[in-house]
Every structure is written in C-alpha cells, then in structure tokens.
Length: 588
Image (cartoon, rainbow, N blue to C red; front, top):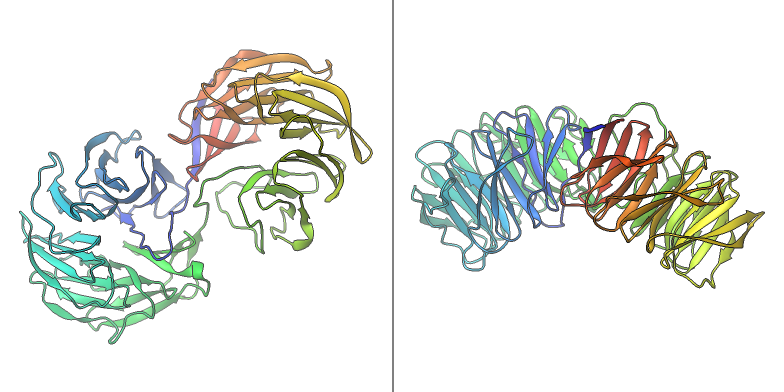
C-alpha cells in the first residue's frame, strides 16, 4: 500500500482591492513566490503546474522572499512573525522564527550576503526592524515614519543602503549597517506603495498611489527625476520590478495597465492593457530573467508579451478562495490547464457539485439555486437555473434525468431540470442525500443519525418507512458506481457501508478518523472509497476489509479536505480550504 503526490494545482495569490501584492523571485530566476491564506506558494516560472506549498504559519501569511543565496525563504504573517525556512528539502525545515514587532508584516528584504533581514509593516510600537538572520539581534533602527510602512528594500552592492515607503506619503533613506535614518523624501502626494533598488545598486525608485514613479541615486539618495513626465500612470502604482540589467523596469497600476520603462530616457517603451474590468487592476509584478509577470485583482497571474502588449503569452487561473467541493468529468489529458465557466453564475458559495449522464455539471449554492451547466460548453445560462425555496446543501444525480437536492428542512426531487416533488414536513433535519444509480431509491441522511429510504415512483418520493442507523449525524453519503453499496459518513468519526441487495444490512464500519468525517467518494472499481475529515486525514478504504486502508495524514497540511474525487482506480484528487488541488497516485 503506497501513496504519493502526482500533481499540486496551487491556489492563486490572495488579493485585496487597493492593496499591493509583493511577489518574490528566486536568485536563479527559476521560481516565484506568493501567498494565499496561511500558505506560501512556490511556483516554477517555466512550468507553473510545478508547485510546492508551505503551510506552517498559524496565521495568514502576507509576504515571502528568497535569501540571495537561494537556500532559505523568509516569510512574514499578519501577527508579525517571521519564519526562515529551508528551500532545498521537501520538508522545508524551520531554521529560525522571530517576532520583530506585533502586527502585519508587509514587506521583507535581505542583504546580498543573506545575513541580515529588514521587515516593515503595521507594528503597534514600531513600523520596521532590521536584524541578523541567525540571532535576531538588531542591526539598526527603522525610524522616520509616522504611519504604516508598506515597502522596504536593501541595496545589493556595498556600501549598503536601505529604503522604505510609507502611508505617511514619504520615502526614507538609511545608511549602514548599523542602519541609521539619513533623510526623508516628500516627493509623493499620496501613499508610497513600493520602493526598489536596481540590481546594480546605482538607482532606486519609489512608486505611489498618486500615479508617480520617482528615480533616485542609489548611493546618495539624490532625486534624479520622474518616469513619464507629469505622471507615470492614470491610477495608483502598486508595484515595480527592475530588469536584471538595471536598464528598464515594469510598473503595475490600478489603471489596469502594466508599463515597461526605459530608465535612461524615463519613457514608457510599452503599455500592456490588461482589460476594462475592475478585476483587471494590476497589483503586483515581477521581472525574472526574460519573464515579465503581473498579478490582477482577480488573482490571475499574467505572463506579459513585449511584442503583443494587449495579449499575455499566458494567464494562469485557478482558485484564490477556499474550495468547497469538487467533481470529475472524464476528458482527455490532464495538464492542470483550467478556465472559469463564462456567463453569470452562482452569486454565493457553491456547496456541492456532481456531473450527470447528460454531461451537465449540477451545482447547488448558498444563493438558493441549483444550476445545470454543460461541461462541454462551459457557459452558464439563465435558463438552466432552478430556484429553491430554501438553501440547498447537497445534490446527487441518477439515470433518467433525476436530481435529488437536499435543502434546509426539505428534500426536492428534480427531473430534467424541473422540480417534480418535495418532502417538507420531515421529523428530522436532512443533511445529505444520494440517489441509487438505477434511479429507484433515494437515501437521505439526517442530523438524527439515521439514513431514511424513499422509493422513486414516477415523479414522487414514497417513504418506505425504513431507516438505517449511522453512528452520528450524517455529513455525506454516496452509492458505489455499480449501486451495490451505500457509504455514509458521520460526525462521530465513522464511515458505515450498507449492502443494498441485502436489505441495506451493515457491510462494515470503518474507524480511523479522529474527528468529524466530512466527505467521501467511491473509486470506479467499486471496491475502494476515500473519506476526508476535520482531522485533516484522508483514508482510502477497502470495502471487504476494514483493516486494509491507505492513510494520507497531511493531505493539505493544517487544512481539512473539503472534496474528494477519483480520476481512475489509482488516482485520487483532493481539494481543501487552502484553495489548492492535489492529485495522488495510489498503489494497492
């Protein structure tokens, strides 16, 4: 029995309107870094389907930066903790942890020898700190600002210089080590969002919410001019990134453009128009080798094309919020390429999804609707929407165009996308449901810890007066693909399997989870099924032998699994509240 991860389909960056997103790049130019929730995501530049996720922060992580040596990453979170961890091993062992101040860390910079770290943000008693990476002892003072510091950078050539940019509309210039405040620059009329030295150290620039980008001498801090004359951008500038040869830079703006600048002439060489929607605002950018990346408010990662500025070379899409459900549709090839359905879809959280025999994705949502959307067309349409009286929480499908929707206090049978029958004066609260693949029986699991059976007769559900006991309130349930078994998960940490042909007698109870079991899925071989719980464990069980099981202990470390699906009998996919999707290969 063995299991290994085949693919990690990582989440996108977590974005917030009006807040810059700092991207990290590794010194060799192969990977880039960003954060989402409590995770730091490392992605390969050439093939973003190759990803690694670091999830050891107990709080939301805001920024992560490689040490110039490439061996360590420093990441900072909203509580003010900095974790410095190994990049060379899969385990990412923690080297040091510090708390330079209490409050959100917004940016981090290393000295070129990888020995000193500066961090800035929203501290209560101070807005920044600079310290030795191995002892945490201070190597200077970051003073001179009266408000939150948004950005910090350190010159990567000697003599060292340090710069900061703040919500007090000022930039500050420091010499060191030990780093001491020299002077402020008051050229910006609004927040300073980003400050960056050129790789050769000869210049630095500051970018602000006023649409301005100013250039300064890297050694003296003397102002050299502004990019683009009166204004660099029509909207606020959130991020800048220099070219490796220090002759050019890119800037990302709320005006939904990225601009490529020639620093010598202060002229824009190219303007990349990223769209017209508010979600197309540009909040982050990174220049690595010959890759130019930008991040949209949507979380999309854009690879810019200098020769075709209105069309990115590629756009990486995906999830940026916690994933609630997943299902599989048979299709050729698995690359992790993805896209959103087009058109106007659900207006609230989607709680459950299944694919029916007509290749429609059936989804139920907290917006009180059930939708039927063609998996081939991938387009939402207003006509394929069924409005529910109350919020649906679970859907299942069977042959003959049948759908069973379990809602708060109601069970609804749909046929060919129309409501045909409703059970509502129930003496239990329905939590989950399953229709037998043959379409003859509907099973509904309740908060009363029972599974209630109904026969499907024409367009009605008839209470058969038969119920089976689960071990606790039911959380999820599913028939095996061949209809031979019904598996039920419950809050009391157990999975129970019933044999359909044997009048639903208990086949086996499956013990192992340490907490509420929340989701389950049958293998296409009908002999195995997987379950996921609040204990963050995924088990793969064998129907005929409750002791024969595969355990995936940290499927999504520190996050419980929200969805399970099988691609084939040896391939399981998991989703989680960490907004990532993982594909596992199982050997029995």
